[in-house]
Each structure stands twice: as C-alpha cells, then as structure tokens.
Image: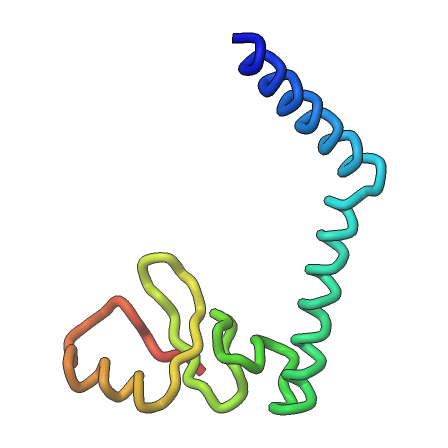
Length: 104
C-alpha cells in the first residue's frame, strides 16, 4: 500500500512540475507562434509555386488554389477548390445535385 502511495505522489509531483515548466518556459506560446510561422511559410511557398497567396501548395487546403474550380457548398456556404477532373466526375455522377454550385 505504501508503494502505491509513493507512486501516486511521484506522479502528482511530476504532473504539477510539468505544468510549472510549461508555463515558465512559455512553451504553449512558442508553439502557437511556430504554427503561425508555418502558415506564413506555406503561403510563401504557394505564392512562389502558383502565384496565388490563397490556399496551400500541398493541396490539403479548403481555400481554392490557382487553377482549381471554385465551388460553393450551398448547405454550409463554404467555398472549396475542386480539381477539374473531380468536378467533372461529380457532374457526371450526379447531374442534378444542388449541394455544390460552381462560382466564378
């Protein structure tokens, strides 16, 4: 029983000291700034590759990239970027769909 108490006390002390050191070294703030820097770097790479500041060069963004078809989701109002072949497949498979509307 004493061993379990000591283990619980050590875990508690480690948990409290971890929170102190995260606060002391401002790790959460540093992480937020690093994420913001990464976003800016992705935009710069995208500008270099596509000439467009919107979106990301890896194609995982919901913001349309240059050369993509801008489509609006009528349910959520969200603007998405579809590649031409994906948009054509949607049109072929569901010609009467109204969820996505092409915008210019």
